[in-house]
Image 1 (cartoon, rainbow, N blue to C red):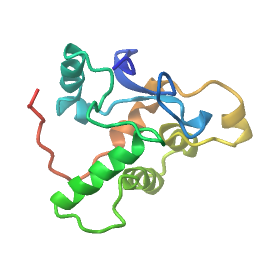
Image 2 (image 1 turned 90 degrees about the vertical axis):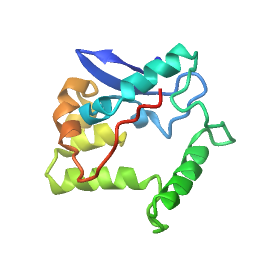
Image 3 (image 1 turned 180 degrees about the vertical axis):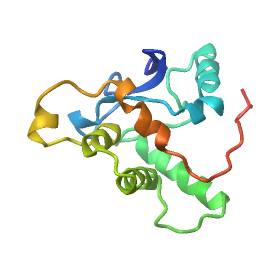
Amino acid sequence: MEDIYQKEDLWVIDINDKLDKKLKNQSSKRVIPIHTRLIALGFIQYVSMLQKNKHTRLFPELKKSRDGYSQAASKWFTRYRISCGVIDKDKAFHSFRHTTIDYFKQNKEIKSIMKAIAGHKDEDITTGLYGKAYEPLTLVSAIESLVFPIEVKKYESF
């Protein structure tokens, strides 16, 4: 739960390899703002509930396997997707990443911003080699631009 906190009046998630977490590579390490829609849907209340119950992981029901926690999350998502009537096998957990990047591309987002949010290495000599990582405040407008025409109900089972 220490990976979700406020920085510069923004709620952020710190994606890192602390404790028993794994990252694909160093570019995967990043701090990104949490979309205000997630906050409005009760994400911070969910995190607070977990903290009160002494949980240390965002999804405590996921069990660690040989490759970390991603396999369990992917399997859960497959079951959830099917229960929602989405039978298309091409729609996997990783589809969120593809959809986000495609959205940014179609809306002409700056490549270095896209890479910072996705956790991809920026190999451009100017933006990838010089300067520090993007601050969350710089990423807010890109994150907030992510709006999809779906109905989502507020989660209130805390």
